[in-house]
Every structure is written in C-alpha cells, then in structure tokens.
Image (cartoon, rainbow, N blue to C red; front, side):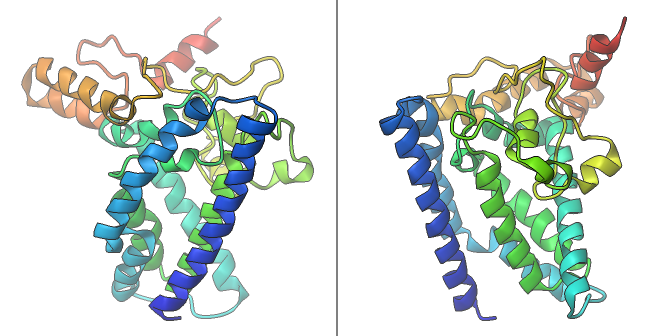
Length: 298
C-alpha cells in the first residue's frame, strides 16, 4: 500500500466515525436535551484543534510513522496469512495494555494521560480530549513496538484503524446506550467494561486497560466488571474544571511540579516522577493499590 492509500482509507474511516459522533451529539444536546453541549463536548472539541495542528506539524509521530520505523528494524516478519492478523491483533493489544498500564502506574505518564480521564461524563468524542504529548507516546508503543515484533505495517495500520473506530464506540454516552451488549461482554471490550475504566470509584480504578479484546486484562488480572450495586462515577480524584482547557491539560503537571519542588533529595524527586500517583516520600501513600487494600480490609 502507498502513503496515498493509507491516507485515503484513514480519511474515509475518520469521516464516517465523525458522522456517528455528530449524530450522538445532536441526539444528546438537541433532540433529547440530556446533555449540555459545552459540558459534554466543549473540552474535547477545543483539544481537537491542538491535536490536529500537532499531527500536521509532526506527522511521523503517529502510529503509522512509528510502525514504518519499527518494521525497518524488526529481526523477522510474521509473513502473510490469517495467522498474521490474529497474532498482529494480540501483539498490538499487548503493547496497548503495556502503555495504558504505565500511563496509570507511572506518575509522569499519568500526568500526560490524565486529561483523557478528566471529564465527568462520556461521549464518543472523549478520545479527542487526550494530551498532545500522548501522540508520540502512543505511536512508539502501538506502532514501533508492534512492528518491531514482526507485525507487518499493513496489519498495524488496519488494527490501529479498528482500534480507533472501536474506541469511539467504547466511549459512547451511557445516556444513549446504557445497557450491556450480550455475548460480546465475554470476549470484547465494550462500553460497559470501559465505563469502569473511566471511573474514579476506588474499586474500579486502574482496570480494563485493553481496547479491543479482554485477553490481556484477563491474563494479567486487571479485568474488573461493573457491579450492579456500585454505579460508575466518572472523572479523576483531583478537583478539575472540565471546561478549562488549561486546567484539564496541565493541573496534574502543576501538582507534580509542586511535589517535586517540596521533595528532599534526588531519590524522592525520582519517586514522584516514576512511582504511582499518590506515592509520598513521607510514607503517607494514597496510591490506588493502597486505597484498594483499605477498601478490602474487614
């Protein structure tokens, strides 16, 4: 496939997915009036401008650009055949799980990932609320590392495309489709599973990291079902103004800088950078793992 082929296919899929998001937006804000436009869509649409500008200036930092680099360094290739698509999907999903787990467990990376979790509601455009700094981070893991494992660039492209389309579906408003999805719940990430991931309830935090299947979450023990007796509360635990682009994008960075400035010694400063969010040099930890242990205590 040529660069023009990739661009044409990606453009068509992007246009169709945006059309679906537009229908969701019209239903929620105009027809049913269940959401305020500014509350549900203001922040992601503001951020979309910065994402699009950065992707124009730094196009090689996307998944496809990194995949081309990884393929050039790969010691082997999976070749052709149906098995390549299955293995390619699993490899892509593995690196998706890894980068997503790191984004929740390493505070510096959480500062980059947190804007995606800041909104207190979900819509299919929430993916546009990501930090611009995530562009090279995601590209490295999903593109470079997947291709370095021998997955052909074409497979990386189409799996990444499927991930993007499915990702919009995962974030669809619970006001639009509130229920579960039957047999799909046993094998695929569905909006039900992903709503748990976006919760700030202690029981639900740091779970359901993959984007297409449940395989790696099941294998690594990070799969958490939605409980009937505990509704999801969306957002992050830190107070944030969801209508302020600066606050959503940089409040976690400001908090990290404050902790770094107050921390004594290099070791403690490195701890605030690379230990999980909530870690404290004083030992008064408020990490998710610590909070879950307290929740489980009799």
